[in-house]
Image 1 (cartoon, helix red, strand yellow):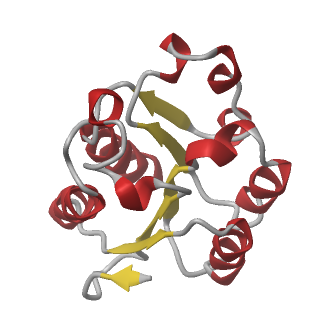
Image 2: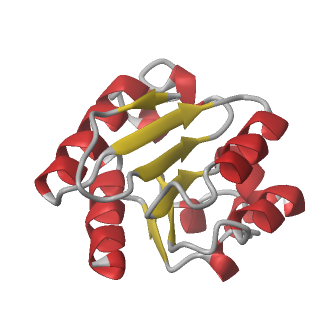
Length: 152
């Protein structure tokens, strides 16, 4: 997990699920050519402007993401998450996301509502404070800014 330097506020937890480590390579016609490093940099820059640090984690292992959420209790202002494929499949992830009792912003690079039917259901959306989809990686910036509004 990467973490930006300390800031006066508790950091934002930036979570990226399976296969997002392949951004820029995997289906660029759907996800664009930006990389995960670009995503993290964009989120860190937006957060820093608003007085927040970022703790970033990408994992292809569901249990690792759930453990990171558990470990973040009391240590974060909120969560920006792109659950990727777990969006549509993971009740366990949704259950874990309510534990920290902080605002959650759900992000999707593509417009999932315009894609396959199975991608149009989210276990995360009902517990999220907001959902951003279809804006490419700019959606992460929007999510960070909205999350900062919610916790300020």
